Image 1 (cartoon, rainbow over the protein chains, first blue to last red):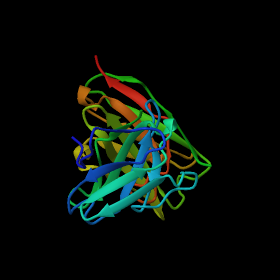
Image 2 (tube, rainbow over the protein chains, first blue to last red):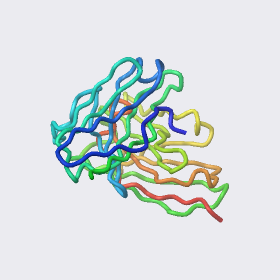
Image 3 (cartoon, rainbow over the protein chains, first blue to last red):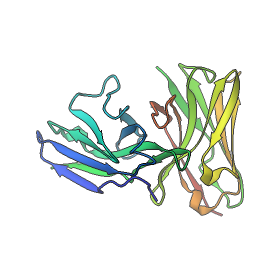
Image 4 (cartoon, rainbow over the protein chains, first blue to last red):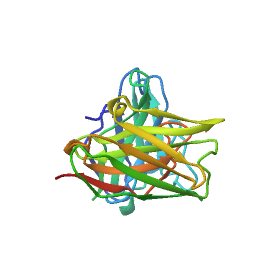
Length: 110
Length: 120
């Protein structure tokens, strides 16, 4: 029962730009930092975005994050076949005194 | 570069206790960060279970959902930490991960994951 709401799937052709959404509420996204993870099936999640829009070293600048109010989004530009994965958003939730995750969006590169 | 190596059983009987260990290399369990346990299942998604961190002493912090059943221990000499989850039920079947992260939920390094099945 994920707390943050993500669309189950998104798709795009190679080279295109895709945006994935993450919806929460004031107790989580509305008042805390958003993180994004990329997970290739069968492997552990990988930190993709921290502090709403910062990329760890080694993450291509094709990935960008943003936040507005109680929603956040992850954009992937110049889609490549290796971007095909599941993407999860996460944030601290003040009402639960712990972090919460989205259910994930499966990105398909057509 | 930090590496986290998990070990533990893949099968646990209902009502028994799950014990998993996460061995740390490239960092110290007492460094200025936190060490976490997270699980993932098709029904519950990603779920944070708890963390341990060092601030003159080791402290723990647990998710409300498992607080009555969970213990996270630290083995400083072995540079590793462990998860103990008792009264296991089939609903606890999941892939269990250990991870590092000073800011929650910013987990920058993960173990390889262990699929734990609860079944008799």
